[in-house]
Amino acid sequence: MQKLLSLRWILLIAIMLIPITGVSALPDALQDGDENPTEFIVYHSARNGNTDVYLLNLDTLEETRVTFYPGIDRYAEISPDGTQIVFESERVDRFDRFVLFILDLATGELTQLDIPGDSYAGTWSPDGSQIAYYAHDEREVYQLFVYDLATQQSTQITTGTINHYVPGWRGDGNALVSIANESNISRFTAESDITRFSNIHVTDISTGISEQVLDTPDWDSRVSYSPNDRYILHVSGPYASDDVFVFDTVTENSYRWMDSVDLNTDPAWSPDGKYIIFVSNRAGEETDLYIMDRGGNNVRLLYADAGEISEPMWSYVTVQLADFGSVADF
Image (cartoon, rainbow, N blue to C red; front, side, top):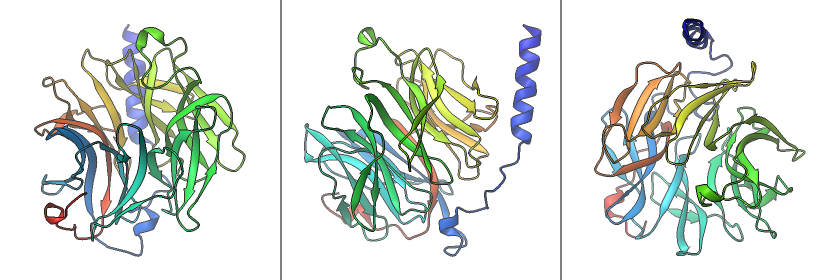
C-alpha cells in the first residue's frame, strides 16, 4: 500500500511539472482579436421547469441565462473566437429529436445548422471552421460527423457498427476522441441490460479509421483532450456513480482523480490546461460546479446555483453579451 501511495504522489508531481508545450496564452483564434477576453463557463441547468443554457462569468461569478425555450437546450460549447455558442435543442421536433443551433453572443441571433435528421453534442474544431457531432445513420447506429460552416455540408466520419458518442477534437484538428460501444447499446440503455460497456476511441478524420485507446470495465462518458494533447479527460464508473479519470496517451495508463461515493462527472479542462472543472453532488442532492488543479489536488467549490449544473465547458468570450433577458424565444 505504501508503494502504491508513493507511486501516486510521484505521478501527481510529474504531471504538474509537464509543460503545456505548443499552447499559447490564448487559443489561435484569439491571437489577433481581443487582448483581454473574459473567461466564461457555459453549461446547461435543469430549473424553471426545463433545461436551458447558461454562461458564468469567472471574473464576477455572474450568471447569464442565454436560452429560454420551454423545452430542452443542452450540450453547449463556446466557439474558439469567443463569439458564438453551439448547442443541441429539441425545439424543432419536441420529444422526437435533437438538432444543433448556433447562438450569436453579441446579437442573440439563432441559426439552425442545415443537418438532416438528428444531431447531438456539437463541438467546434480548433480553428472554428467545423463542428463535429454524432447522429444516427440509416441503420440506427450512432456515427461521428463533421459539419463545414463554409460549405454547410456534413461529412460522415465513422461508418462501422460501433456506436460513437460525444466527440472531442484533438488540438491539431485531424482526429476526434469519443466514447464508443457495440451498436445494441445506447446512452439510455438500462444498466441491467448493458452487456458491453463503452470504451474510448480516437478516429482519424481523413481516413475514418477508429482506434480503441482505452478499455474500461465501467460506463464512460464525456472525453476531451488536454490543450497539449497528451491527456484525455474522462469519467468512468458504475451508472450514476461516476468519477474523474485522466488517461495518459504516452504511458497508456488511466489514473483516477476522484475516488468517492459521490457523483463526480462532466469534467473539462481550463483553456491553459492548468485546471479541471467538474460537477458533483458531494454537497447535497443537486450537482454544483467544482474546480481542481490538473493533478487532481486542491478541490474546491466554484459555483452553486439553484438547480443542477451539467456539462460545463471553460472558454473565452470576446464580445459584449446581448441582453438575453429582453430577447424572446431563445
